[in-house]
Length: 622
Image 1 (cartoon, rainbow, N blue to C red):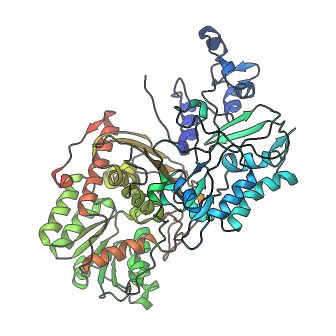
Image 2: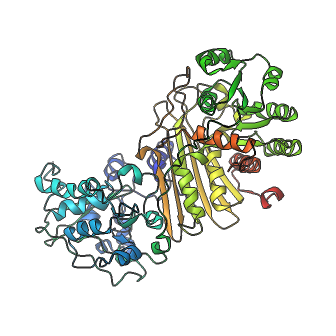
Image 3: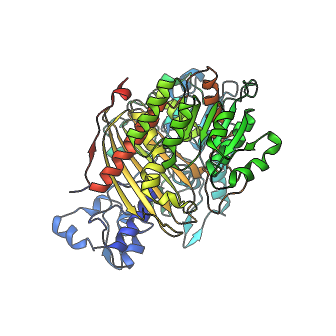
């Protein structure tokens, strides 16, 4: 039996593609939203005869739930579970304020009153995390207020009672008893309790008490005021859409529960860390002379950051764009040169923003000239070339800084900090996804001999992050699909998956997609440990986006991130500080080498279809 795990962000695209190609799995997960589409197109096997033969007890589940997976009189799906929603709370902060724990007597008014009493603006503690979420919050409060979601084919969201139920959550935010939605975008779910700034919260996923191991058997859900609820209640959890059968009783408030091992009181003193403001001395550092090699998208992201840091920048490019870019920033003293020798003569720092296949030669030339080097990821096409660059820099006594900018995106930096602080315990299962339009604007991207392909060029960000969080990688199993050869054009797609086994025993799953021209750039992560989960979706909160520096080719993409400062500025400030004798950057040359080594192993695995074993290098073990 071959079990394949596909992240939610790509699940339906993968399933649809495999159906069309005749490679779909024999058994797979389905939800109520899509069951009729697949059943109506004749691609599903009716399960009724098998259920009858094997004595499958469909009656264990609510009748309405079973019927959702039937079509035209035939049963096409068998429910595997039915979820409930739980209320999580920080016992230490309840004790500190003297508020009683939630129990079976609580109503929505009690929840609101407790949120008010537990909120302390002076110490930035919020009483509740009121996420604008359908299943966890909207549906229970709407029904508790006597409203409805759907009735006889009509939406109930215009009903006054439904609006009253929805207003419960917006009022909590408006009154300052809950963080705003923007503050909850980077770190979600149970992990917020570990930061100590939220007292009560509904988790993103809560198991049905029937399926839990007795850890909360004595915890009951308090009833909510409101009239009998006779209509069916849709439930949606991460793509599951169920319907709960009609019942003549008030809806319960989700049960108060603390998952075993979840101890937010240990972190009471922690507060959500705000982005540090730029240092007042940040632009008064010794003026650096920077040689910027390249005039493409990354160079145009770096250039404004260097200018803000007060650097004198000289640009070199072989495509004729150096002069154009320098002219646009002439008022900031930016100039262009026509030779590498001329650039090296003017620079103390060299910033390599060129295609991957040029990195090694340019970096070795700059290092030989005694220059500190920042090099766009990946450092090189092979681990041996990357190690050669790192060894040369170490021997020359200069810095080689791999520009893994994702480490500086606030959501990822906050997640790494939380993991380092022990907020979720030792990471056990890590999932990363990264998707965007196929970069056909530069033909070298689609040629693995020049870029390393999607595994090396795009997915290396998440391979690096997986190693940062869970430690060294000892086994890689990867697959590739789609077009990975020269000559890609709009409409081509490529996708890669890599499963990493870490020396710690943790497992990481990394997915990368180069998709259609209109595919929105998106990244996600979900990092799980025994004490909690950290998750993020870049599309949940629109934020800072670099639109252009100079002229950009159509479709060329620079990632967006919710922040007040460009991560490229944060990254280059840290590197510049290290050049001047400050702390070492958070990304080392050896980190860059190891990231290339993992990506190279993934490419080898994808070619052979077999996993690749990795030995922990001596440098990584130091």
